[in-house]
Image (cartoon, rainbow, N blue to C red; front, side, top):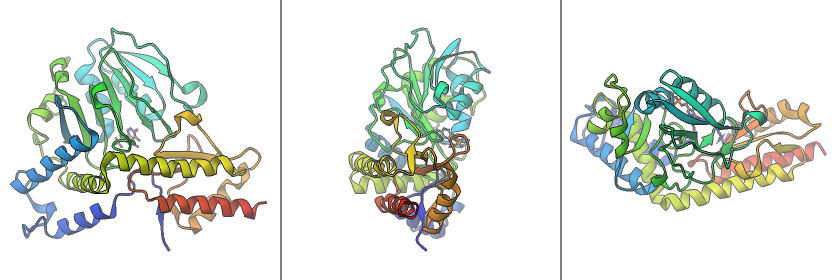
Length: 356
Ligand code: PMP
């Protein structure tokens, strides 16, 4: 049976990237060796790394004056690397859910944290707006897309202090004005690669702001100065990441990617709003293009397990909502085809007819 993959992460990757990776595991770029059995210091792998960086730069339109590096440890390691490097006295955080809360918890090991805005009052169903950003903060931290709740910033904030964003779940899904950010980072296992690699885009002046002496692997300078090669980088995920970026470029780059993502999200949100059995869970203006959350409408809550089974039988994978929100979540990352969303919409329509 055909499967429609809506997994929240690790998640769907482009077929072209998987096929290239499968080949490279057997014979990496004609070397006669597996990609998994070569030194990261070979010129072949260095070529992969350089191309991954230059495609990232091109697709996201990263201006000069920024460095990109790849490192292990996941986004969760950056939760403490960021304050270790940049929190001298006080940092500002916007609390938009689980992932920003975890980052806040780690920051408190290093200094004062001011939560400048929060959407906790309504179970993180919106993105706070119009809040003041004190000018005495070492940095302001946001999570641009909240994977669990399905909320997403639609504009790049103007911040008087260095702006740092966790873009784990919406990187390269929409255009971003990188010049407004001092640092953008994320785990790559949703839109770009298998689990195991974290991307960091950092404005070079941030390297002068390192707040304290740090162990080598924690210091951001280590990774910039050694071009992701201070230690063994995650070779395989970086290879797949490059292939994903090549695929993105081949379909028309950021503009086309964004168009496709908007189209898919519009299709599914329209069905959620039309179908009397379902309702969306977040403020319309803050709805994520990537993680689309919905529940059974009022009075129909008891149908949730039945819909989940019904959808599963139709080939839908990974649509159970996170336990903190309940209901359903369809993660429509870059590589998720429109066909999958159409299949989910058809499934919702059929379920509605059965219950009329
Ligand atoms: N930030 C966001 C927005 C996430 O969705 C996740 C993982 N789902 C994380 C951080 C944590 O990432 P990792 O598992 O790579 O530490």
